[in-house]
Image 1 (tube, each protein chain N blue to C red):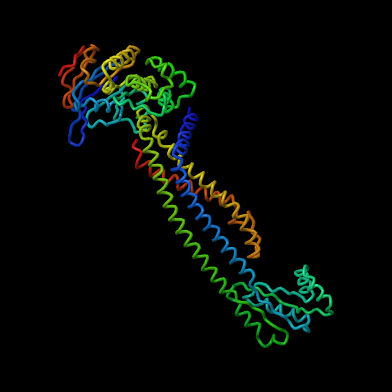
Image 2: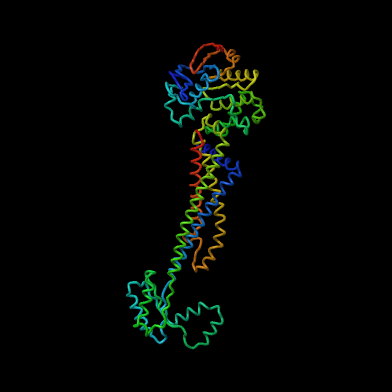
Length: 225
Length: 303
């Protein structure tokens, strides 16, 4: 589903990612690990079109990302769910409204939004927080809302960039469980993290990055640096 | 699906308008001032134009004949005058017609009516009213009429030279045009700046929302249009407020102008039609709003 061929991205003379060759198949759960500045976030940004590839080719579902026009990017993003460390929830909207927002943007009718959002909040275990505002929720709950929002378009790929960075250990494992559950439901999950314990618990493919390059690949990996 | 998206875009735009009430009020107010100046310019221009037209129409030469001159002789002179290339029309008013119109003009003045009743003879002379093709021809015609060959018949040639008044009005007209256009231009510029700044602040206030919209796959159209809708709201509000001020002022002004200038201006007269004035205000406001929001979006909305 995702194929990097000799991809390089340069920011002002500094190569953020260099000569990346990587293939991720449908339904995989892939962890990308490495220290801060290793190029994890850049790699993810290339996938959802936030950054453009400078050299090499990047294919998503056999579509060359470089060939996409500016106005095609929104439709690419409707196939991809994105979760960040800082959650990016709207403080003046309830959990329901935050998730509904993503569907409104894509032009879904009201009835479908009401139906789907309730179901998605159920999946992430927040049914009883439907009408709570972000301020009234714990960090873990907020990240669940963010994941729910990412799932609103029924994405084929879920990208999570340090989703547990602001969470304590207990909440982190709960979020990991949720991501694994989403993966089991058929969505490809790409998790960038430097939380050693999480990666070791998943027992799935691990890609280690260092100075913009892939330094190690393991099929059932551990966090090693 | 398209109509629900359109509805959401408009709703977001309206929320932008309501959410920062004082900001919106300022943007609307500056637009009202701009539109008011524009309207004032337009109306004063039209009033001056009508006044000039009016005075030009009223200029003529009245030739008063001696009472013993026969109608035959007067009509001969009329025929001769009509041959002059400078003359557009010569109208003959007999002594009887002059008396009738004098009586009618003063029908409500009992004293004049009584005095006229006492007279056995018609005190008014027959006249010819001469209209020139061109304003500048009047002095020449007046000179022609004072020639010796006519002096046996003509009692008096009455010619008021209104050209200086007309010239003065023309100068006012061009001053109104110049001052009005430059004032309107300055205020259009201020309005664009204020609305630009308001939209910029809205973009700033909504930056989180815009960032998330981009992440969840909102089209550029969906992100941009609420800000344009917001500026359209300013334009609508401003033009409605301005026309609400304009209507009573018009209703007060027009009858007084008619009395003063002796015109018959109504709301349907060209240049004074309120619908057309409203349309001009609305179109101007929309252009100002869309220009400023487009600039703000281009500069500050990173998509």
